[in-house]
Each structure stands twice: as structure tokens, then as C-alpha cells.
Length: 402
Image (cartoon, rainbow, N blue to C red; front, side, top):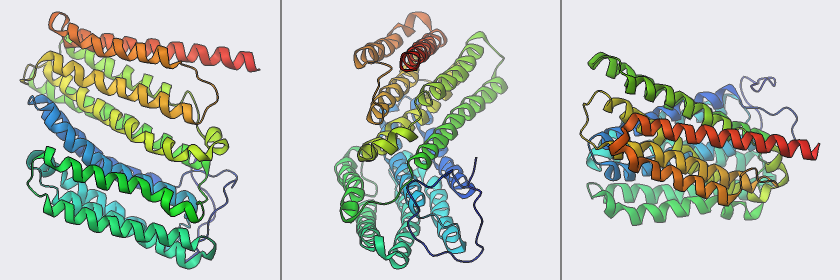
């Protein structure tokens, strides 16, 4: 469902929306914003796949995580702001167009960032995205006196940090990826601290069920991106060579992995838990960086696994298998940690999850003897088994509480 409230064509006074607003759902504009964000994520994923295929997985991982942080953080800031202040009038729509344009500029800058450590286009795209958000916060501060101090603190902090990002981007231009890590970590940590600092003067009125839906929709879009990456790789492989058993195996496993990931993520709806445990919202929201980046990285890993069936890449089969296994393990671990924050019951105990993680990360070591296709099939079987166990335990828990 999407937001079907009456539209105002020109202007609506921006005031905080009710926390318990009934039937609050995502708007069509929010979904359009998500789709533009995924364009940048697709570009980052393609560059990561290219790095893995050329035997530079670790070198490609750093720029992927850095660029993904910029995309995710801008998306997250917009999502939580919209949950509190979405007016959907002309001014709001036009100011939302600004970050949409910015993320497309950022997407264009991903290849030079990944290949030549040139982050200038990424920095400019991020700047455009942040200008739109600052303008929204200033408008909220002007039009909603009750939340003025919080809104203006957000606007000031974001503006100051954006100045820092610009200095860092151009000062560190051309430096090796490793040399950029300290500056990036410092600025990213300051970004993560802004919401807590800004809301010390009063929390924003975000809607728990709306936020849960927004995160769920973005997860689905990212899983769709995994399907697209694998499908595109299959098409390239079929054009270069004929259909083979390994190709069919990995293609089928890709679909099963996406389906199992979707199943596991939505096994525990978060809306009710967020409503009861608003104090955990920061960690819940921040934890999704690991979930979202793991899903995107899985698309890169499956892309390379499909390409390897044609024999056109130089990387070892074991590395390819780990390019699939590591994102799977990261996704499940992050999802378990995030779910625990908003749920009183634990379907899967930590000891069992950690044991499963160890098993998944050991499976690729068998690749020299079994081949990539068999390894991916084993990883898929592990995910399907985990999904089945989690579903059975949830059903039993619901029966006990009924």
C-alpha cells in the first residue's frame, strides 16, 4: 500500500506528523527516491564484482564500503526525515528532487572512485544530496516552532560535516585507499553521532510502522538488484559460451538465496517492536548498513560466480566461493543482531547462529576439490536449512503463546 491521503498541489505547513498516525504507509515519492538510490548501489556492486573477478577483492571492498556508506546514509536521513515531516507539497517534492539528482551524480562517480581513488564526483553528488536535506530541515525549523531547535541543530551539524567531507574529498584526492581510512572513519563516526546530538533537545516524530515498511521495501529492492546482477551475468555467459550444468546450478542457487534472504528478513516484522522500543531505533537503523551492504555484495559475488562458469576470469574458485559465502554470513549475523533489538523473543540463539556462521565460512575451503557450483549449492542448502529451522521455531513459539 502507498500513502493515499489528499494531496495539496502548492503548499502545506510543515509540522511534525503524529507518531500513532493510523494507516501510515510509504508514499510513491519515497519509492521513486529508493529506485534512484539503487542506481548508485548497482554501480558500486558492478565495480566490486569487477575487482573480485580481477583478483583484487580486498582492494575493491574498501571503496565499495565507503561509497555504500554515502548512499545508505543519505537514504537513511531522508527516510527518517520523511517519516516525521513529509508534507508532499510542491516545495517538498522539489527539494526531494535535489538528493535524487545528487545520487545519480554520485553513481557516475563510482567507477573513478573504485578504479583510481578519485572521489571528486562522489563528493559532489553527496554534496547535492545533503543540500536538499539541509533545506528540508531549515524549512521544518521555520514552520514548526515546537521542533525548531532540533531541526536547526540537524541543519547546522549536517552543513558543518558536509564542509568537512568536501575538504577531505579534495585533500585526499589520488591517495591510496588505505591512506583514506582514518579520515573517512572519523567523518563517518561524526555523521552517525549527529542524530543523537540533534535530538537531545527533543526527539523527532518518526512513525515506527512507516519506518519498518521503508526498510523492508528497500531490502526488497536490493534483493531485486541481486536477481538483476545474476541474470545479467547469465545473459553475458550464454552469449560467450553454451549453457552448462554449473551455470544452471549457480543460477538456480541465486534465486533460492534471494528467496531465503527475503524469508528470513521478513520472518520478524519490526513495526511493533520499534513502537515499543523506540530507544533502540538508532542501533536498529544503523545495523541495517551491514544488512544492506551484505545484500549488495552478494549480488557482486553471484555475478562473479556465474562469470566463472565461462572460464573468463582469473581469480581462484576459492575466492569466488568466499565472495558468496562472506555476504551470506554477514547478512545473517547482522539480521540476527538487528532483530534482537526490537524483539523480546529470540527464534535463533546466538550459539546456534555462530555455529552456522563458522560452517558457512568453512565451506569454501572445499572448493578446490568440489568446484564453485557445488560450493554455492552447499551454501544455498545451508541458508534453506536455516530458514526452515527459523520458521519451524517461530511457528512453535506462536503456538505456545496462543
